[in-house]
Length: 128
Image (cartoon, rainbow, N blue to C red; front, top):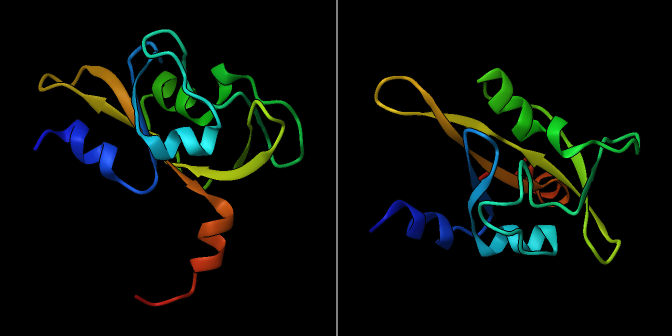
């Protein structure tokens, strides 16, 4: 099985970018979270229509957690943001962008997992 097939089958939002931030893959769970289908190879940093900080301030896409992860070549954790869908609904989410490197250590892109914060908050503290 290919990695893309595995990522596509996951029940949570996953997407990848190249080293310039252009979206190269996303799964259907990401489409559900974003409320839209970004254009592969054209849309950059995140598939969200708009992004906001928790205090409601607009967060430009080129400053979103995925952009920071690529610009600074580091994992981003412990962040919550708000995605606005094209229909105006909003969802709080937790991003987990992680830079990806080739065999020589060169940055080639990143993978991001987006967790619906409401779902995560409801399940925290439960044991498996």
